[in-house]
Amino acid sequence: FIDALHHFEQPLYRVFSYTDLLCQFRQLPSLPLEEIIQENDCISKIIIRIESPGENLYVERAINLLNEKADENKVLDEINRFGEYRCQKNFYIGYSKLLLHFEKESKRISSKFNIPVTFMNHPTDILRMFDKRLCSDLIKVIGVPVPSTNIVNDIIIKPNYGSSACGCLAIRLRHHNIHCYSTIQIKGDRFFNSLKVKKYRAQDYYLLHQLISKSDHVVQVWHKKAEFPCQPPLSLGPPIKTPPPNFIPLFSRNKPSFDLRIVVINGKVLHTVVRTSHSPFTNLHLGNPRGSLETFYYTFPKKSWITICKGLKLVATTCFPQSLYMGFDVLIDPEYNYRILEVNAYGDLLPRVLIDKMDTYHWEVKEMLEKS
Image (tube, rainbow, N blue to C red; front, side, top):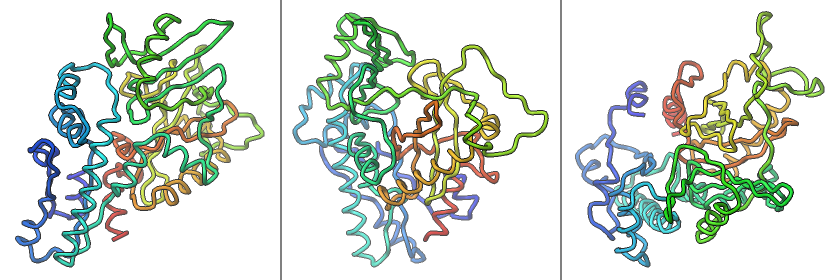
């Protein structure tokens, strides 16, 4: 992102780490902007970009402890068990308090110095995206499709404040048999996050279900996904791009299913990644391969793509109007209809995906400057 700022000749910036800001446990930090304003008379506007806290145990502990009801000894014990699955609701409460405090601080500084202080992604929108149930409800209200919550034999259970498929269960019921897939690994009486998706039988499923049920969670239908490369019916019309005469998609007997990560910036549908998998979870950090974007454009029906783009633009501008960018996880079913699985406030990291020779960060800075 800093490279993008330099590219657009924006040298005046400061980076503040969560570690530095949260140096005092159980104390909300001040935004250190006053010194910068006093040192630079030329500042006429401040734009704040909030990054993900990442995987930092010190930061996680500090954010958890911002929740006044959090038991410090319990928080320390849970975080010291590195790699173990834990409920994120306490973290969400602390993070909500932190981001809303940043919003309050921005208004105070703006009023004091008579300088506009804005956010690339507003704290309120970020928290709405973090809350899976609330996010899905907001999208559903405006008529954009999301996963069904009418319980059937195949379901997905997700922690409401989780990410990266941590703590997710994909459950299939067949002839009184239970098949469960999860990134959680069971070791004795302990449960660990893993980068491998494991299949469990009934006995272990009950242990996992009991674990997830202790925390706030959402239950959705496990919708079947389309296979990749795409083979849409002729009735859906031509693909997004006309393939060259020598183009032949590489089909295999055991084709993976796929979904899409699509980044929308300032209401524009831009960067896309095809995520393929033979398991229920397509997250790339689990080792799942990217599908060829060229093959996607040459095989995916243009009619369906236009419908998706309209839906994403509507969600971005209606549900999260104070945010410049967001990453959408989009399910495509075998009939090439779509559903929005999740919206990610920090879902804009798509390495090696370029539009007009620019990655997501360069597009964000470009749109930010044009918007301001």
